[in-house]
Length: 245
Ligand code: HPA
Image (cartoon, helix red, strand yellow):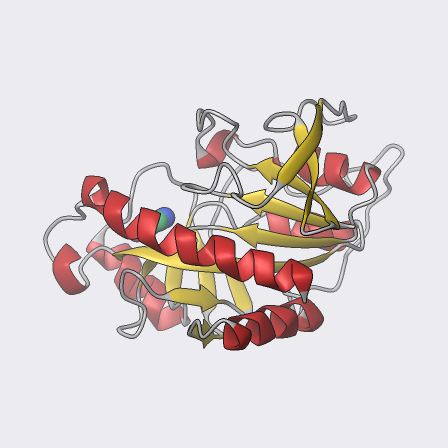
């Protein structure tokens, strides 16, 4: 079963025929909202908007463990997540869609493991390749089929937020090798790995990162709405094609 985690701008999927919504309780508390069970052209999927159905949960307060646990408990073994980012690399300007292949985690204080003792003894999962090559491949293939261009690869730097970064922080992230910056990619990807769920992230670039492009003095985050809407429409088509194959 495929799970789709929607981010900012993707609280619903146009082609998803929702059959039912269900609240799933977990040992880690409540997920961001009820899971939506439905199908896209006959293919079963479960959809969960990360920030809640009304987009009320900020990135640092998302219950990532409950979200991943709930999806897993409902039989999800593949997750495609959508997470908007700021572009650090010059090729990653607003409107581009990237498919990262690596991640650097700069978050602090998030509950980032299921294995914290008790029933879930300490375990160190391999995370050398954080994103599933098969799911990434399916996504690239879908993009090709609908003539969508994706940037294949990139390093997602996940920050704590909710504030945006300073120019110096972005400069440091760039020196580290990060090509894009977002607030929700972690611990989501690592938690999926802990439960053996294949995971890939689709990252629409909605703004230049601080100190880059037209964000050289100031990030006009409010101005990202138009790019966001246009790009999410393409992301929807991409996911729908990916599901249908
Ligand atoms: N920084 C952090 N997270 C983001 C950004 C950004 O510039 N844009 C979208 N999510």
